[in-house]
Image: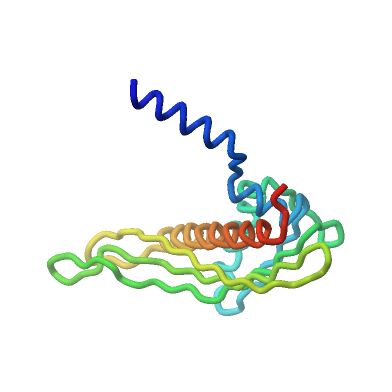
Amino acid sequence: MKRLFLGILMLAFLSGCGYKPSSYYAKQALGNKIYAEVTISRQDPRNSVLIKDAVNEAIVSRFSGKLVAKEQADSVLHVKIGSIAFSPTVYDKYGYVVAYKTTVILAIDYEDETKKVQKLTASGEYDFSIESNSVISDNNRFDAIRYAASDALDEFVSKIAIKGLRNGNNN
């Protein structure tokens, strides 16, 4: 009975205080129509394509925005891969690596409706395991980069949401 009362009280508090998720403020800052441009790396073009897919997915799923041509966009995102790194995190009893951490750093230039450009960096991580005494397969590598890039884009959403809240887009 006490838990039910506390649950109802918490629900009433959250709905009564005007709670809005960070994606709401990020959408307010970015607008509905977004153009995303990912700079393709000559050294690793496959990863650039994975990052492009992750950016497009984030725009549609996290911002509920529309991908449009640059001329129609409320805001423009220029995304560049800062770095991608794989580091071992867990070893088995024989000294073989059995888990890795993937770190992706993205450099994002965000241009709003007023053509004001803000530079942000966002980093994301993803941990994954492999079989003992084996190498990282292409599938593991691509999945790890995609998930780490998605995590970096979550950080970008948070940073944009804070900027949106600070700039008065909180009505």
